[in-house]
Image (cartoon, rainbow, N blue to C red; front, side):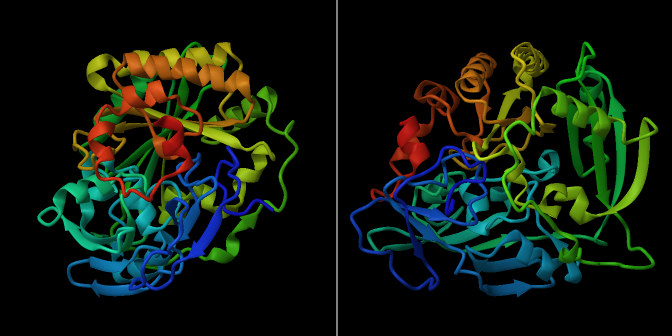
Length: 435
């Protein structure tokens, strides 16, 4: 059994104790080991792991405290999941202000990783929509944090990887929607420059944008499908329909490690690119497949086998020719035969992150999934880190399982200032690795 590991299943933590925390008025356990909050464990690497320590499970904190249906202000305990919020909010005409590619995360986890989504160019990160929260420190002290009250701790906790204390409840704003459907357009592109042209054209007219990229194509440049959309106006039927979970599929066992190889990855990417018969396609889709296509397959991480997988997500700012950095990394991966099964490309807008350690910055971000090929992959990703460092970018800690201390210091020079806000009893496998 692989209980309480990360979604990427690498690295594997040992000797962790899970402490269920279900009463927000309780104190933290009196133990000598280090503590780390844990939601649904959807971080890919070791930022949600705590070797030889205690994981404070927040999933028992799953109660709503207040919901103003007129203003969309929701106050809930930190273990409430995005999936649960959608079931409450969508039928009432509200939606999450920012959401990643899975709804199986908690509100506390969304703050700890200051998650971003397809609407970053308009809405920024999740932290931008949080008005206040309560944090419980190992000293027993409870602090209400907002932009006006304990503001330093507020900004350190947003994107603070769960190291500043245990969040018990959160108040944040939802977004008004007219329906649960998305007016979607998909556009094929055949080069990185074409991607940037479509992205720039889409920034003012589309709230949600993202692109799937074929990084293993035999073409000279990258190719992919740009996806953009807005919530649709009320439709005649099925307005505010919540997706039925009965359609979910499940991967019951780990696939053999030979399942994903350069031939199967190339075949998958070719089929995906050709799924659109025409270069442009418009249609109306439910928000579920638009935002959460992989959530339809439970335990999809098992297709990578028991060795697990790594996701590598970086951002490079526009001012340092981000296109050149992206191109270099894709060329490096192709040369090394490290095919990415799934690659997602997106631009970040000019909404500055508020969190002290938040990942997003204005520029372009690429996320790549790799089966765990071992040392050969780690070496190639180290070379990718060097390209990102030279371009003034950063790698996302929530996805990381192997970055060096030197790279982390270069990506996050503010870490020294951040350390003063870390709770003395809180730590994680990731933090001990990169300090």
